[in-house]
Length: 88
Image 1 (spheres, helix red, strand yellow):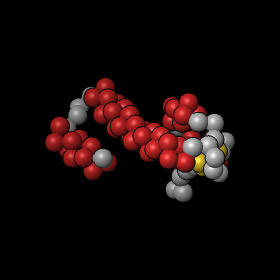
Image 2: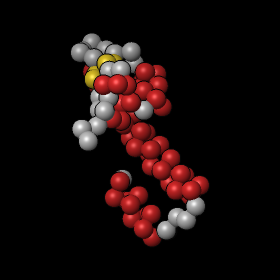
Image 3: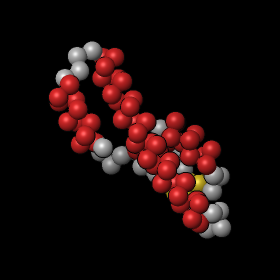
Image 4: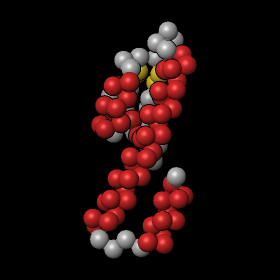
């Protein structure tokens, strides 16, 4: 997905901040949709009868993703945003 977006940006050459923002928003939406699909598969397969799913790292600090994940299940562990950082 990341490579495809990169190719799209190179070929379409967005010029305005609005165009760049729309591309970034669409990328984030597609990436989060994929994560949500995978988490749904996890809970469909295993249910809530197992250890909680831990979501961490920089992406876990995103409020939209956190809200979408908590709507799926309460059997999640997502650390406070201060602990959800990238290694960089």
